[in-house]
Length: 97
Image 1 (tube, rainbow, N blue to C red):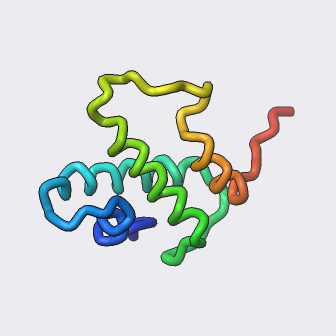
Image 2 (tube, one colour; image 1 turned 90 degrees about the vertical axis):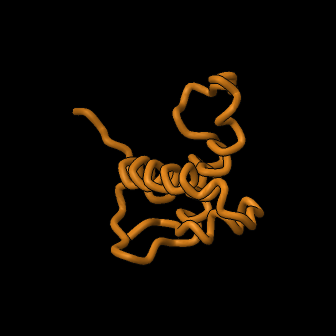
């Protein structure tokens, strides 16, 4: 099960038509994979609202910058800072010893 569904993404982005559905569906799949790989907690089928919000923000970020041709600001991380701040609550850092 996806962290967020297409109708939630379209509502978040204020999209009423279906013209962007194909790209939004691919963003949902990618956001799911990235977020599930980043967090260390397991939730089954119900995700906390902070994780859902992180997915929506990440998809919004990609949608906003998809036509920039790679001209986006880089902060040294592969996730935007607002997304990281929401997800860090559910991540236990790996420590090498």
